[in-house]
Length: 103
Image (cartoon, rainbow, N blue to C red):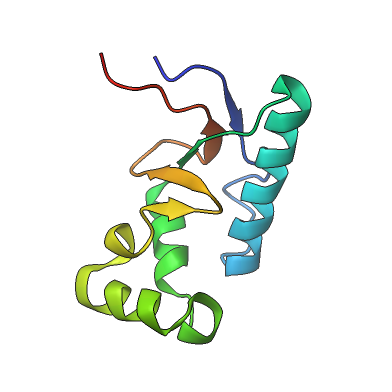
C-alpha cells in the first residue's frame, strides 16, 4: 500500500498544460500533505500527461545537464526526483505521499 496520498489540485479536463501548472499543483499538494500530516511527502506520483509537460520544459528552466539527459534518455531519466520527492511514473492521478520501502 502506498499510504496516505493527497491529490494535486486541478481538474484534468480543464487545466492549462503549461509547466507552471504542474509546479503549482505539486506545490499545493505538498503543502496540503504537510498541513494534514505534519511531515513532508517523499513520493510524487505523476501521470502520463505530467510526463508530457515535463518534456516541454526549456533548458533555461531545468538546466543544461538535465535537458541533455532528457534529450538523450527522456524525462524519466532526467527527473528521478522532482521538488525533492522520488518520482513514481504512470499513475492515475498526480499525488504526493510517503514512499514505503518494498517488503
